[in-house]
Length: 172
Image (cartoon, rainbow, N blue to C red):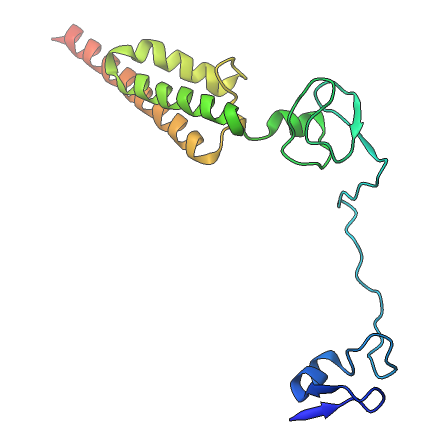
């Protein structure tokens, strides 16, 4: 069924006319009135042409839409301003992620070797409770966190087995 606008004579499907609530032509008096009720959330970042933000690493002022700091050359994952705490707790990405993934896989492999548990267990515990030089646990993506905790569990298992067998050999 076809509906024709009574003022501008444009044809519409009946369903379209009902969905729009009238004519869809700009400036036509039969067009539905639209009230502006939609608002932008307060936390939405909308930079202007001259807006600036602070680099969370070197604290210098940079253009708000910049993804690289002009002073310290730090890469940002988003143009949204970040606090120092957000910057330090972000997940690894890019080249850093490749390096860290290799380290976590190596950590797991060394933990799986039973004869090295006395090296891997302290290293795993150090990485777990401190922001070690090796990697920061809270910045790992979920699959690497799972692999890290699996490596920690394996090295704990080897330590328990070593203590059990040492105690058993002393008893017998």
